[in-house]
Image (cartoon, rainbow, N blue to C red; front, top):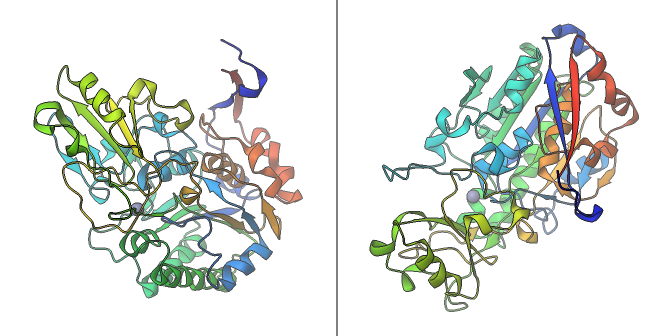
Length: 440
Ligand SMILES: [Zn+2]
């Protein structure tokens, strides 16, 4: 083990757990239920140029983070799976929204992957399964990855988005909240993840700096007001914690004549050099060169466009925690914010997009939380979304799987009663906890 200077010292806490199932009612005496809601593509500052009375009330009644940083690649399935596993994307293996096969050259869309266990199950257990193995009852409502099996186990209840599911039907949004409230009250579920496809869809279609985006944020705000009233109506105020978050932000796509767009066919001949590629998907792309052509593609592309970053897989910046998984193709490309990585032509469909560097402020997203275990009126400093996982485990009283997050980053947002529980999971039942501190 090599120790570097203390500033760059990275501590990964691996919590390995050997446990026997703990009596369900014994755990429930100590821990509250948890609802995780994700509004896809909710940029961190979307509530700052539009009236959001319900979100403002929420900030007074609970916790608001200034913003949070999603993992790279800032994309729906990879980022949601980091939230639900606490692992970097290169560890959990869901490296893109699209599933692909470099032999058959087939690509599967984001929605087509949702029931494909072979894409999601890479020996990293999401919280649904871990919680179920420890006596909890869990459900996924449209949340990415909820429709797959993990080590042969399905989520207790999972609804997967249909292909033609409308993203912005406000009535349906409210109905879904009522369905989830009934799951908690009538069927005693402990942990539910609820996903909404907005404001991502509107952000792509019209761009983030538009009246359309402001309107959908107001619709989300009304929905949050409905949620708060529903929690009261169903008698869950004292027993249900809620986390509201998202997977990435959104930035305006830069187009001609304002800029010179990135179009790779201007620099390389695809039929001679490229075996397979994932391009035309926002700010990030990957290329599998034909045999012996990697160096040629790399050399040409790396200086092709001033706003295009090109890397060989093994040289991709460590800070992204992205490139080590075997599914990653040999050449990686990403654009400066707003510069889409186009391949053979430009689609001109999206006015807003993501997939860019997660350090860019337009890729940052939201974190809100309220309920019996959270402080009221607490403004949290920014943190990485990877730390949501250990927080959720703590709230549910579930021993975490090995993960890259840390409760230390979020525990200040808990009230004193919840903080007292910090060691409780170690003491209850017959759980044996082994904590390893590994410095690299
Ligand atoms: Zn999107």
